[in-house]
Amino acid sequence: MTDIADVLLVHGGTPLEGEIRVRGAKNLVPKAMVAALLGSEPSRLRNVPDIRDVRVVRGLLQLHGVTVNAGEEPGELVLDPTRVESANVADIDAHAGSSRIPILFCGPLLHRLGHAFIPGLGGCDIGGRPIDFHFDVLRRFGATIEKRDDGQYLEAPQRLRGCKIRLPYPSVGSTEQVLLTAVLAEGVTELSNAAVEPEIEDLICVLQKMGAIISMDTDRTIRITGVDKLGGYTHRAIPDRLEAASWASAALATEGDIYVRGAQQRSMMTFLNTFRRVGGAFAIDDEGIRFWHPGGPLNAIALETDVHPGFQTDWQQPLVVALTQASGLSIVHETVYESRLGFTSALGQMGAHIQLYRECLGGSACRFGQRNFLHSAVVSGPTKLQGADLVIPDLRGGFSYLIAALAAQGTSRVHGIDLINRGYENFLAKLEGLGAHFELPGAPAHAVSAAAAVA
Image 1 (cartoon, rainbow, N blue to C red):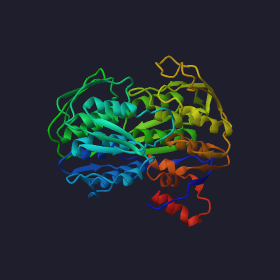
Image 2: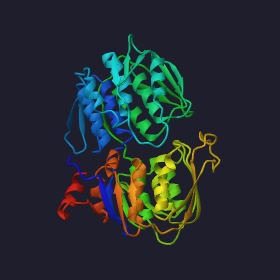
Image 3: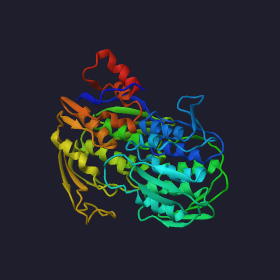
Image 4: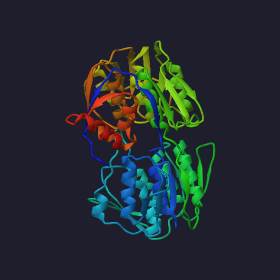
């Protein structure tokens, strides 16, 4: 991949119109790649996006002796784990800070090698995402953990054993950790208050194809019966519903019309209901979903984020940009990540009227109400946004800044756009195809299209 400048000049005020395609979900594909470590045979994963998280996991797998090659069709990877080996600590540490995915290598490596090393972890700064619980879970399975200056060293003196675990919160990462560890552990593991996101279900499908025995109950309980051996899998990843919703919000905020090929109704039903309440229009067919602004004023709404099947926290930030163009007062209550509304300060610099509160402005259960976090917002609109200097804080916030810059009058200078590559495949090429006006400072005009094509 060719490096591109980390600053983008965005000339706003033009509706985004056209078609883009979303491929496999960022919140599934890297985890399915890690799952291949558990197998005794090669696996084939299809619909893989070219995003940074995929490249990080590919590098970590290769460090551990897994052969990763392109398959026969575009977006297909063939992962061969038959020669798994220990990796050099310095090489692993080179990936530290670039992703939180390495923590999910623990269980598979303990099963395959009897030990694992996990460096310091990165990821988006949107609030506390403690990793201590991951290590507590691994201890419950029988792992020993030694904290060192450069990370955590784990060993499994004996075969890991199934156990009963209740999550204090239905965390996606913790649920993935249990699944990837329990499938080869001895006996039965019962996980209560588990996350049940579509990406979790798809990971369970991957593991079942490999030979795992996993059942899901309607009360958020997952039971895993450990097996002695797993094979490979052939799987097409579910499309990225979070990216699809981001483009939908971009269509709404810019008064545009975007067909998102690959988007699926079933995993987006909660978002679609909210999109319609705001005043957006959509049409669904077998190949994707068309999102557009039908004209006229948008509606202010009250919105609370929640774990699936509620309104996803990753949908919140892009939609808030569209809510700055709605008539009246919108109320947003963020219940998942305590710092996720921090991105709104930049929208204020662009002319948006957004006030943050420490109180819970909603009736849903919330972890932050008594902890003094600014986790509720009142958005007053409509307001005309003006171009500004913006520094991207995190993945979804970063794409939200792009939406705001595209909706604004004038030119915005957006810093840190490389962070968007973590979860949005070829986003510059997609923007160019939708008619967005932007440029890479210092790059010749003919180079912009080339950079977009390889972003």
